[in-house]
Length: 401
Image (cartoon, rainbow, N blue to C red; front, top):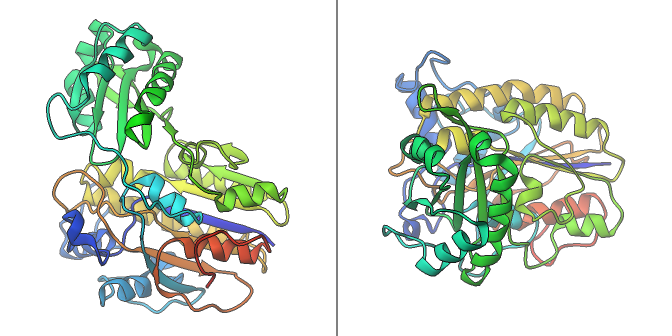
């Protein structure tokens, strides 16, 4: 008897009931991708034709979309065959990664994060001065809201010449620091991020993100898989904390350990992209003890395609993930619980480059019993269901389905 939570980062399935408050009324990550594929506007060198997700559809993705929006996206309107499915709306106030994951793990975020204004410069002058003094930096570049890939392309050469790290933010509660792995140094980047973490705590900033990159001005710059998030810890005990207190085996995959500030995350394994993360998930499951919990994040959907508004790339990533699902399903025991879900949306057809406030799928299989999911208010029901399945004490929030 084991439990697995797989988070398809940003795979939303339609605007949340409060999406208008966030400027996201009408957003629909999966629905709009499917429509673009059906219309042929998401054809590319790597994929073409309608969106094909037979394994996710068998788990109930189409039915979850129908619950969320009243319609199943084109190509996904096939009844589920192997699981129960539903959808959930977030009650946390943000549409960011920590809020979504913490709520999945049983801890909604009732407070407002701190954010940096859409001005240039966007960071407080005293914060920049303190960081430069403590980290012995000649200054910083950027100091604005920006797309991470674009600002590195624009300022990478100047950064390498000056030694000034590239600092920027987004609509999320983040302070991001990009630096070249060779000319600046990866460990030095992490050290600067740790200093910044302490300095932004009074501002209630959720994450400092280290964004290392490589390359040259001639060949172009590319972000690497050595990203690290320096997060504040959840304000209450999550399902990970509960499992750890009970002595359970815990495996975390991808950036789960960073999201939860390395609290209760057990043995962590990273991977290069979704394929590497899927490999790590299969390996983690193979070594997961009875009564254990595996928690995985698949980041490519969000980072590589959602934020970059790459519809074809997002569609191809969904199809590649779907194609690998049978490898995982074949390894499940009859009394294992698998929940496939998401943490927010990032509709690649939407304006801007930020997350979108959306409902998420809740796809459940091999629970050993039938369950009624339907439309859920709050992601915390996922954590409560995992606790019930593993016979752990219930989290403070959520109702098991």
